Amino acid sequence: MPVMDPSAIHDAAPEPTPSWVFKSIPRVIAFGLGSGLLRPGPGTWGTLMGWLLWILVIGRLSDAVIAAVIIAAFALGCWACQRTGTEMGRPDHGGMVWDEIVAFWLVLWLTPDSLLAQLLAFIIFRLFDIIKPPPIHFFDGHFKNGFGVMWDDILAAAYSLLVIAVLVRFEVLS
Image (tube, rainbow, N blue to C red):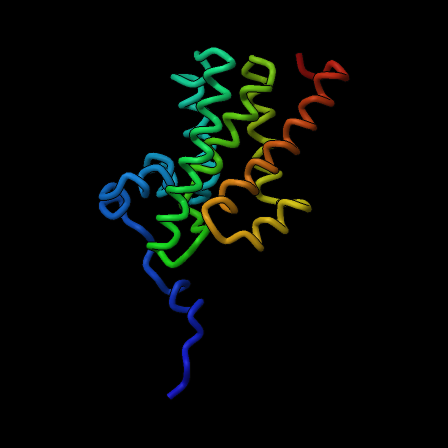
């Protein structure tokens, strides 16, 4: 009898349903309050959820509180994505988008407060998150745990912030 490759089992696993996601707090967090269930492009939907939460709640806080929220949300994401990824047998399922949410909060926090700047930040962040230039690709491929899920998006945020800083410096954004 042929031996099945264990990764094939995970690839054949059914996609999570809303009822499955909403049965567990770690799943709800990892799936970005359900935004990771949306198709196509769950990472884009997760980033949009992050932007919405920024507008409604996070962006209204003081800088010290925003920094604390981002740090706490990163730690919470490491835990939730680790638990959910382990349950699914897929350490970095595309529907787990808490990493996009938290990383985009970091980008928005340090981006000029205008709709144009935030829209450009959204596009730049999504490009870096999708393209995964080095070392993002390395971390994405080698750290298959909750920290790895969260960390590669923080690196995409760092690249995004570098581009935004250059645009601000050259007065393209203000």
